Length: 248
Ligand code: ADP
Picture 1: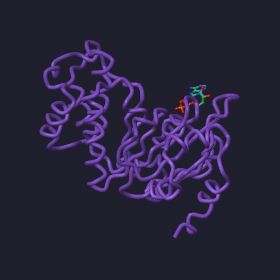
Picture 2 (picture 1 turned 90 degrees about the vertical axis):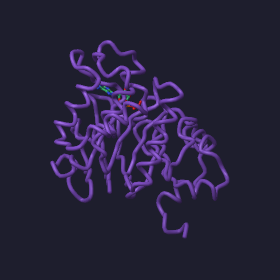
Picture 3 (picture 1 turned 30 degrees about the horizontal axis):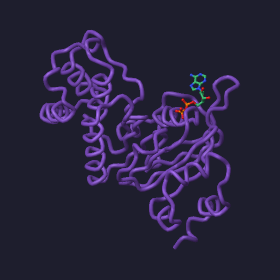
Picture 4 (picture 1 turned 120 degrees about the vertical axis):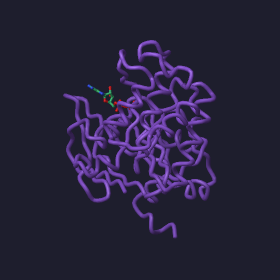
């Protein structure tokens, strides 16, 4: 589905992503985990085509910046960018038109209901609290039902109901065979259905492991995270990354 190969991104002298490579399997949930500044947002923005970078990113074999790939790709940014003079329902309509969605009204209604925004439908973007803005941001990202969805720190600022709803949505999407890439720096927020974890630090991929591999290793994600990010990682994790066929 998604192939990221040798992606390097510099902002001036800052090396934000350093030779990052990974791929995502169809119908899987991958968690991109890493401390603040690890390069998670940068790789997401590179995939979605917002940044220039060195390296190659393809979606189903198509360059990620091609119009065919863009039709497959969806993105929920960390920072909502709403229009102050559009209402909640106008935002949904605007997005539906941009994506040329037909029959979106029922889904739009359902999303606003699930994220408790139905009674805010006539409120303008700048009348919403931070949390409500983030919920609308999520509804906008979910409306087109993309085959591959990138979610950048989606839990930040959400109330417990919205977090639960978002996790349910993610499970539903996975059951529908969609592919998800979710970035977070909060390990506890990913105690959900995930198939693979990629841990980044200082712009590099430090571990890339499936849930089954982690379970076979008999350790928790938290244990792996600290082992990897605090530099006491055992050699066999790298070994697994390089030789996935050996696990069979
Ligand atoms: P994360 O999403 O893991 O917190 P980022 O991808 O946002 O990390 O940042 C990676 C590195 O790139 C950090 O050192 C950050 O300060 C730097 N960085 C991110 N965006 C910019 C930018 N627009 N200009 C300069 N440096 C940036």
